[in-house]
Length: 390
Image (tube, rainbow, N blue to C red; front, side, top):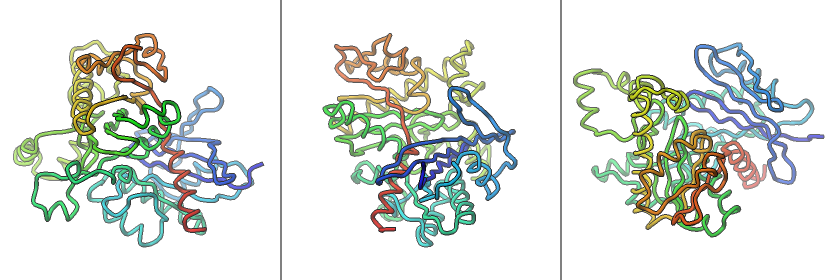
């Protein structure tokens, strides 16, 4: 029988992932998950056994009604809600770890909305909706940027006036909750590798890479915003600032329109003209689909090379995220550009999405490790509660 449960919300620009955890002896054990998918027909998706089920949502926005509807489909009857933990994309320079969501923290999180205009408002909407439904329940925030607060000035600084850097215009990095989980799993599975020089590729509709030494972030591909780095489903990744100036002068004449273009019309979708979903592109034999995938793999490999400089070599590469965990064709495409580094994949292991996919004679060990951001959020919430003795 369950006495107390914890709930986590992972709000992104296109989905809201919800997890429920059994809380016993200061440890969070997952007991249920749901995903709210936005679109023309918003739906709640979940798995019962091996069957994927879908339920149409009564609303198309985050409010108390949506949160109540989702939790009614997820929470077991009887137990008390011990906490609600949230993933918040941006913690700026203010948050270097998880935090209790009090009035001060909320004001600080809201101040970062201009830097993260898509994800940050979604997280705040969920926080406020939960606060209205469960006014006495403890809420905590886990920040995607916090994992990268270990980086030195060389990694975080743009070549701009110092006053601007000190005002917060700098490289932050994201997907930190994913990297935190993956590096802990790697240390458990392969301690020698987990304690070495590791490059992790979190590949999904949003994608980035991180170079770590002994599980500590040294450098990462994303910077001030989640637009930077490698190409993504609908975001361009790194782009010459001169292009943005040109587009403002000739195409958009408005920062909001340019922002929408960069978030929704670029990346794999823009290059292919077909889709931003790698699964769709892998099944499409038109040249534009192949070119988009080739560019994706080429830029990932290039970023691995750059991060190798940052961390002084590479002992292991880890693939995670929806694409990284499930698409051997993408991993193979990356390998084609890294043979000079001595990286070699086992074809059978790669096709099977095995945990270890490198060959025995590969100079670099290659792993596939599923990520679990919700578990990190739950455990960080417990740490905050213990710290504040709530």
